[in-house]
Structure formats: C-alpha cells, structure tokens
Length: 290
Image (cartoon, rainbow, N blue to C red; front, side):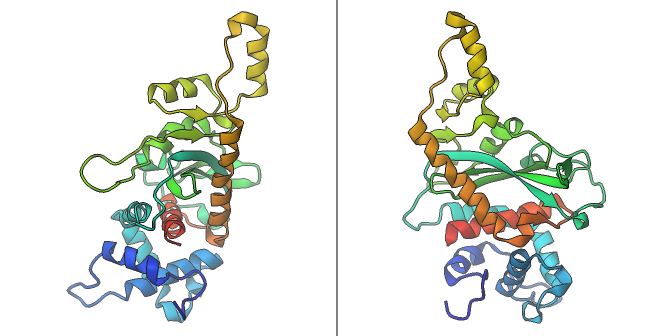
C-alpha cells in the first residue's frame, strides 16, 4: 500500500484486524479512527519515544494510550493474535515448537506502578509487586518467555521478573498455546516436537513432557552427563537427542530479534506489565500477518 509509514498497518494486516475491534461509535460521539490510533501505537513502539511526543497525524496521545489500555482490559489484543495465527496465507502452523527467554532492561519509568495484586495466570508466576519487574545484572528487568512455531512465529508469550528461571515457566508457556484450526473441536495445544536449550534440561521436566506425550529435543548439561557416568551401569541411558532437529532452535532467537527491532519492546518503558505484554501481542500478530 503506497503511503503507509514505516511500522504502520498494511492493508493486509488491517483486513484481518478490523473485524475484531469494537464498533467505532458511542452515545457521546464517534471514536477516532481505529486504524489511525493503532498506527499511533505502532509509532510509539517503533521509536520508543514518550507518548507526549506522538505526531499530530495520529491524534491525541491520550487517545492512543487509552485505546491500548482499554483493549488490554477487554482482551482485544489476545483475540487479534488468535486470529492472526490462523490467517489463511498458505503457511499453517508448524508444530515443531522452540522455546526460550530473553531479558529486557526496564527503564526507570517502568517502576512505581501502583500495586494492584498479582498478575493474571496468563502472565505466568507474578512478581512480588505484580508487575513482572525484578533485579538482575544491570538493574530492573523483565524476562520474556516465548514459544514459536517452526517458522519462528509467536505462539505464546509470558512475562516474569528478570531474575526468574526459564524452566519453571515451561509448562505455563505450553498451556498458553491455543490454536483454533477451524471447525468444531478444541484448539490445538500439543506440539509434534519441542526444542529447548539446556536451561530446560531437568529430569522432572522431561518426565512431565513424557506424561503429556510431547516428544522433545533438549541437550544434557555437562554436570548431568558426569553424574550419569559416575554411576556406571546404574546411571541409565542418556536421553534421546537429535542434533539435526536441535539446529532448528535458532528460529526463536530470530523472533526475539524481530521483537527487539521495536525500541519500546527492546527496553520496557510501560509501568503496567499488562500494557507491555499487549504491545508484544500486537507485534506478534504483525509477524504472522507480514
């Protein structure tokens, strides 16, 4: 589409998103155009600039921020990602799933949100203050836990404080995957294969995956190899590991790189974890619709 600014919605993406948005009207008058507002939100995410610096062509900055907050509360962004995942572009979900996490620095502006209790379960284990902020090297930070399909497209996103471990969030991350494949029946959740790095190499995790019937390729840590060797015949066989399949894990790293091209995602400025997650969901939908 000619005239579309960098990072703004294309006609293709808008055609999928538009039917999922609330009716642009109310008793006191019409809302500002939804597409204009979403483009304003995208400008903010792309540049990382303060809301007050939003260009006039997107309308009042308060309108864009309020629309982001309103659609976070009513689940609109989750519905948009759900729809984008099943958009018929001839490239359906590839169920060889890779998982990983990445820490993002939280700007000082992200601190100080009023305490409103724990995060909803969809955000995974809440921080002590309920906003997925923690202390790690470099100061305040948030960790993004991500599952992607075989093409590196986001399937689920969870947030925890930056110092949180990866392995405790694995099953919550998998449970957050729900892909409606059309027709009757439940959404699909279980992958054909799970690929993960050594951070997930724990015996209870492997046992839990087997109980769920999920094939997995996870390398052993060196201490696990040494412990098994020290026990001799009692150490048992090493877990199965396919090097060729494991090479596909780089898709999740590439997805993180796509997210972090958006400056407002590479550094967290939002006080509310819910708003930061909604920003991730919006960009995740655009990755599917590109």
